[in-house]
Length: 339
Image (cartoon, rainbow, N blue to C red; front, side):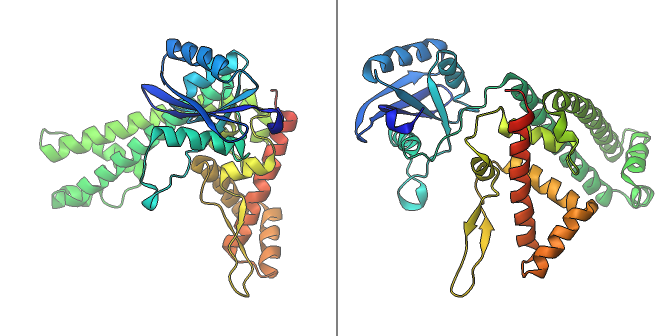
């Protein structure tokens, strides 16, 4: 839909129990607002109200369409409504601390009206299932890391004889030794239970890795064929990309990934830096791929060396590599992945 043909922009500030909707017309005037419940009944009431209040061509600009606004986005798309996704709008006031639902909804509408919000919500069923696996895996990995830190901290403060037995062992041997401890002393019991918890997390991560690899191979096997791309990084890319046509072009994908260059020049120095906004998990996936290629791929090492020979720093060369990866991966997904 061409933006000039849109007559109403409906900004939605989403929350767990209810959403605030503000209607802005083509002239930029606020012509209405309504508060709805975050239920199917509330969605139906909102759509019926907007069909009267904004009876022309309209676009819903939903903040948080992947979380609190997911239900509303699915409901509207299923009924033929035009929906775009917006980031949390920057707020006015000292340090951006002023919070007002009406103002946030209005800013969402104006962001879509200005063309700074053009992505459609992540509604593809396959990538949503993949997202569940990735989120679950990330949570388990964090719990495992926390448990490992607890284990090492207990070893450091353990009695001398026990500390000397356990210090200097590899991770696997440390877990074996802790699980083999006997006795009901608090330190032995704690070490044994934490080691068992870490092993349980390991099993869960392996199960999820198998599911993630199978899901990625079904959705986009071409990603796994790229050098430096593992199942976890590929899964995070697919979760952010979602489906063909969600993002208007590769520049929008790069902006989402936080690898779009922005000016950082000063005086006689002309340089660019990466954007710190966007999807940080997607950015991490691209960064992991870039580091792997720098370490293992001769063509990538030659690319980095060439850029450094032209005066780029190592960080600037990596920025260029990540931007290239975003462009290449987006084009490959758009060209070869089923919609």
